Amino acid sequence: MTLLDKLLQLLVAVAVFAAVMGVVLLVANRARGRRTDLVSGIAFTAPALLLLLIGLLYPATRTVVQSFLDARSAGFVGLDNYIRIFTQPDLVVVLRNTLLWVVITPILSTAIGLVYAVLVDRTRFEAFAKALIFLPMAISFVGAAIIWKFVYEYRPNQQNIQQIGLLNQFIVWLGFEPMNFILATPWNNLLLIVVMIWIQAGFAMTVLSAAIKAIPSDIIEAARLDGVGGLRLFFYITLPSIRPAVVVVVTAISIAVLKVFDIVRTMTGGQFGTSVVANEFYVQSFRLSDLGMGSALAMILFILVVPIVVYNVRQMRKVDA
Amino acid sequence: MTVLSTEDTAAAGSDIVAAATSPSAAAKKGLTSPWASIAALVIAVLWTLPTFGLFLSSFRPERDVQRTGWWTFFTNPNITFDNYAEVLFGGNQPLIDFFANSILITIPAVAIPIILATMAAYGFAWTKFPMRDTLFVAIFALQIVPLQVALLPLLEIFVGTGLNGTFWTVWIAHSTFALPLAIFLLHNSMREIPAELVEAARVDGAGHVRIFTTIMVPLMKPAIAAFAVFQFLWVWNDLLVALVFAGGTLDVAPLTVRLANLAGERGSNWYLLAPGAFVAIVVPLVVFLALQRYFVRGLLAGSVKG
Image (cartoon, rainbow over all chains, first blue to last red; front, side):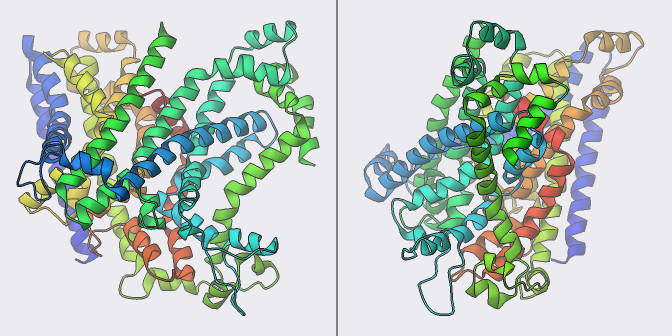
C-alpha cells in the first residue's frame, strides 16, 4: 500500500463516519412534539451503544463461552482450561509472577510518588521536579521497556568491548563480575517490575500532590496548636486526609498492572520465567492458537480486576457516607 | 546547595504562612531537610538518567554504541545523525512508514470515540428515554472489562467481514474500547452545566441538536480536550491492539509494533534501537508537554473512577 492509498482509506473513513453522524443528527432534529426526547435520546446514544454491543459486549460474552471450550473452540471441556492454569507448573509460575507484579508495583509506585510529592511540594523547582517524574507517563510501555533494557544490557567481560548497560557498569566499578540480569530467574521479574514502577510513580505523584494541596489549612493549624508536627503530622493528619486518593491510586495502578503486556513482551517475550497472565494470554491465543486457554486467561484477568474494583467502590461509599 | 535553595524559597516566599501550615512542608521539616533534598534528588536522577542514556546513545556512532557505555561520551565525544537516517529511511522496513501508520491510526481513533461519546453523554445527561439509567450503569460497568476479554471474538468478526489487516479494524477497536470511560467522564462534566441554560434555550425553541451543538460542545471543550490527550497517548502508545489487528505488516502496523520487533531481534542493535525509540517517543512527548494541563485535569477526573 502506498501512502496515497492509506490517505484515501482515511478519507473514506472520515466521509463514512461524517455521513452516519449527519443522518443521526438529522433524525434527532426531525423529532417534534411529545416524542422529541425519546427519538433524540435514542439517536444520540444509539451509535455508541451499538458499537459497544458489537465490539465489547458480544465478544466478552463469547470469550466466557470459549473459555470452556477446547483449543479450536470445537468441543466442550468444562473447567479443564482453568484447572490447567492452576496446576501446570509453567502456568503456575505465570500466576506467581502476576501476583508479584500486583503486590509490588502499586505499593512502591504509590510510596515513591507520595514521598516525592511531599518532598518537592512548595519548593522553587516544584514544577520542573514534577515534570521529570511525570514524563515517563507519556512514553509508551514499549519505549520504556527499551530504555530499561539498555540499563540492564550485559556484555561478557572481554577486551575492547566494555559494558554498555549502566547497571552492569556500576557492578564492574564496584569490582564485581558483570551479570546477565535478564536471565536471573526469579529476580528478573523484579527488574521488569521496576519499569512499571518507573512509569506509574508519576501518576501517583500527580494525584496525591493534588490531594495534599486540597487538605484544608485549618485542620493543619488545629493540629499544630495541639503541638503535632513533623513526621507525626504526616502520619496522623496528612496521610489520613488523603486516604481516599491513596486508595484510588493503588486501585488504578493495580488494574493497569494486571493488564500490562507490552513491557514483558518487549523485554523478555515472557521467556526466562517472566511471563504474566496478560502476556500468556497473547502467547496462548496467537502463538499457540489455543483459543480455549487464551479465553480462560482473559477471564482470569477479568476475575482478578473485579474484587479490586468492588473494594474501591466500597471505599468511595464510605467516604461519601 | 539544593538544600539551601529549597529551604530559602519556602521561608522567603510571599506565602510564608501557607508554606508553614502546609502539611507537606511540615512533614518535610520532620524528615530533616538535607536528607529530604537528597532523597528527592536521588529519585529525580533515577527517573531521568535511563532516558538520558538512551537519548545520548542515539547520537553516537555505531562502533561507539556497541563497544562502550554512553557515559564515555563525555571523555570521547562523537556525534552523528547517521543512526537516525538509517533507522528512518534505510533497510526494507524503514521506520518512517510505521511513523505514517501511527499517525493514520491515531487521528480517527481519537476523533471517532470523542464524537460518539460526546453525543452519547448528551443523550444520557439531557434527554429522557426508557432504560436510560440502566444503560448508563451498564456502560459504567463495562469499564472494568479488560480488553483482552474482547480481543479473540472481535478478531473473528473482523476476519469474517474481510476487514482484517486494514486500518478499519484498529480504528473500530480503539474507538469501541475508549467509549465506556469517555462517556462516563464526559457525562459527569456535562451534568455540571446549569440546567437553566438548557431551559432558556428550550424556551427559545431550540431542539436537542441545537442545544448540543451551540451550548454543550463549546462548554465541554476543556473536558473533551482532557480526554483527547488521554486517548491520543493511549492509541499512540498501544501495542496489544495493533499487534492483534494490524499484524506486523508494513501496511498497517504502527511504530510500537516495529520497535517491539526490533527490540526482540537477536543481539539488539542499540545504535538503531535508540534512535528508533526516540522517534516513537517524541510525538507523545511534545503533545504531552503542550497539553499538560488538560492531561492532568483528565487524570484528576479519571482517578476518581473505579
